[in-house]
Structure formats: C-alpha cells, structure tokens
Image (spheres, rainbow, N blue to C red):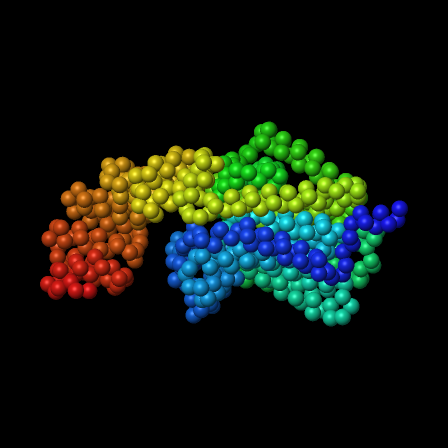
Length: 581
C-alpha cells in the first residue's frame, strides 16, 4: 500500500532544481520562444517610430541626457509623465548591436519575455511545493494571451524587463532572509534590482508591499521555519531608501509633469475601479477578443449597475480568496502578486483620456494568476492523487494558450492590421479610430483615413482628430472639407501651427497668396522652427512678387533644415544660380 502511495505522491521541491526540472523548464521556455517567433519578422508599430528610429537622442553621446529627461523628451510637445531611462538604454543597446533593424528588436523583446518567464519559475519554486505545479504556473505566465502585447510590441518591452528586475529583487530578498552568510550582500542586490525595476517602469513601486506580505505570510504559516528577527525592519529600510531616491530623482526631472492628464476625477477612479478590476479578471479567464484598445466608459455614479454589480462580484471573490488564504497562508503572497500590480493602473486621471485599459498593464499581475493556477493544480493533485488526467489537462491548457497567443500576436505585424483590429473590437473608442486613421495616412491612403478621423472627432471632439482630418482631406484633394476641419481644430487650439499651415497651403492652391501669407505667419508664430513653414511662406511671398522677402524665408528654411531640397531649389532659382545640389 505504501508503495502505491509513493508512486502517486506529488514530488517535493528540493532546495535547487534537479536535472528533470531544468529540462522541463527549458521545454517551456522553448515553447514560449516558438509561440512568439513569428513576431521576429514584424516592423515598427504604434509608438516605436518616435521612440527608436526617429529618436535623435538615441546615441551614447547623449546618455547623460537620457538619464536626466523624460521618456518622450525627443518628441516636441509630448508631456513627460514617464521617467524610464533603462528602457531607452535598452533601445540604445539594441541599436548599437543591430542598427535600426526592427526584426532584431523583436527578437530581444521576446527574449526579455523568456527571461521573465524563467525567473517566474524560480519565484514559483519559493511558493509552491509541487514540481509539476511550478512548471504549470511558469507555462501560464509565459504563454497566456494577455502577455502578447508586451512580447510582440517593441515599445512595451519595459514590462518584461521590469518583471525581470522585480523577480530578481524578490529572489535575492528570499536569499537574504534565509542565507546565514553575507545577508547584507543579498539585501544590497535586492535593493539594486528594485532600483533597476523602478528605472524601467513605475509599477515596480508595489514590490516592497509584496515582500512585506510574503514576510507576514511566512510567519503566519505553521510550517514555516523561524524567521530572523528584524526582517520586516530590514526590508522596509532597504526598499524605502531606494524608493525615496527614485522619487526624488523622478520629481526633479519631471517636475509638474506628473499631474493629471485625463479629465477623470478621483471619484471617477474610485467608482470605476471595480469595473476595471473585473474586466481585467474577465480577460484573464476568457482571453479572447483582445485588442490594443477597448470600449470602456467611466462609472460616474454609485447608483449605476456598472458600479455595484462589479463591486458585488469582487466582494464575493475577495471573500473566497480570504477563506482560501486563511487555510493556506502562502496564498496571501499569491494574491499580492495578482492584485498589487493592478493598483497603479486604477489611477485613471494619470491615463490618456478614454484610454484606460491595456493588456500590458497586467503583465506583472500575470505572475499572481500563474501562481494561483499552480496552487490549484497542486490542490487537485493532492485531493485526487490517483487521478491521471490532471497532467494531460494542464498540458492541453498550456498548448491552447500558446496557440491563442500565436494567433493574437499576428495583429501586431503592422499598424494597419493592429488598429483595424482595434476598430473592429472597440468601434466606440476614439483612440482606436484615430490610430487607424494615422496608420492609413502613413501609407498614403488619405481618402480612407479621413472618415476615421471624423469618427474619432465625433466620439470625442478635439483638436487632434480635427487637424488630422483636415490634413487627410487636404491630401486627398477635398480642400473644402480640409478647410472646415482645420478651422474646427483651431477652435480648440488657436495656436496650432499645423492647422494654420494647412489653411495657408489651401489658400496657395486657390491662388490667394495674400490670405496664405496671413495664415502662414500665424503658423510661424506658433512654431517658428517647424520644417516646411518658412518654405511655404517663401512660396506665398514669391507669388506676390516679394522676391527679397521670399529669398529670406528660403534661406531661413535652409538654415533650420539644410536637407530641404525644395527650399534649396527655390533659393537657387531666385538667386539666379543653377540648382545642382
């Protein structure tokens, strides 16, 4: 009888993984690499161009600038909410090694996700006691479709990178709390990895809370060995020093840029929080219909069913979670990994207007999901030790998730495919319409792009959608519509240089140079160094016979933008010299 029991008993986790465990881990990581291998042929999408190929500061000579400026400092007019210097350094390293080849950037992005999955395996080993459960948890983290956005999109590589540093910090904290020799070294390493995580993505700030929950849950566990006295104090001191250093540096660099950018109020965030969390959990359980954007509207009153129904469901789920964690204190830290990384994303005032939900926001929370799945796997094996279908079922779940992720990743091949998907899944999201229009415009499909911008404006009137619509109609030859949309943009933003430029170009096309001059001068008042503005004014002045003034405008254009060939030709022509450059 004892012999039979030994055969079906779940294998216990040793202090270090054995050869079988490592080979199984290698198989999971290889499956992860294979799942996302098709992304290696993808190009730049979404925010990639301004952050990488168009980023003039992505040079080693500018490394001091990269550490002392916000993430979007290379783009004029972009608000600086993010201080993520290690993300930019990652891009710089890739550019140095591979040049501006997006395919290799995709390779390293997937490798970053694979590295995070590898460390997730070792984190799972500190919490789960069943080798098969640990591997199942690792597979869930690595292969779940909610990880697709961060694994397939180059600019979202900060999610796996931050996870790598957070997981490394957690593991070194665990080593520091149990190792008798050189605990100070391990605490220092844990704090250092925590700092690297903060330099990569802000959500990492929740790590100290997860560590404290882990310390508390270990002390609450009846099977836990006695912890060294003063462990919470050491942990708080280590992470507090790092966090204060990061906060001070970030505040000094960003200044007032950390203020709210969305019209969502504090009450909107509180009332919408249950809806956000429940929608996140829904996508975890039913990861289909994923999209770079979602239709999501704020909850503005507590009397709304969209507030009290999600709240009721969350109360039920929280009650079940508390009940389970009281029976198994290890689950407290599992739930901490699941819930705490979501909390920063509930501050909706810090998000783009009506752009509150993204799959990448759940990247680190997926470790909690994976650990919970692994715990469930271990519990089932314990309750029904003779059941032989558990492992095949787990393998089937992993394969289904891998297949779904491979399919979902295809939407990130290029902007047109990506935002066509967004519009199909979230037609009422103004950002989806705007981004789809921008993708079509980038490919010269202006007639198709203009209605997308109009739809975006109708969903949320603003200068951006109006200006983009004006440009698309102008390029497609519909000058009447273009003028109306440029005027609409100026009603929202009277100092919008691109709209004044568009009106000036329309007047030039209509052979009304005097009106064009007035509009173009207003454009230059708004943006005196913008490319093409002085050239257009020179063309208008030339049409009115003001040759000297036109020459000066062409000269100024060349001083600001020496590569402007049209300005060079016009300048040489008026100067009476051959245009041979």
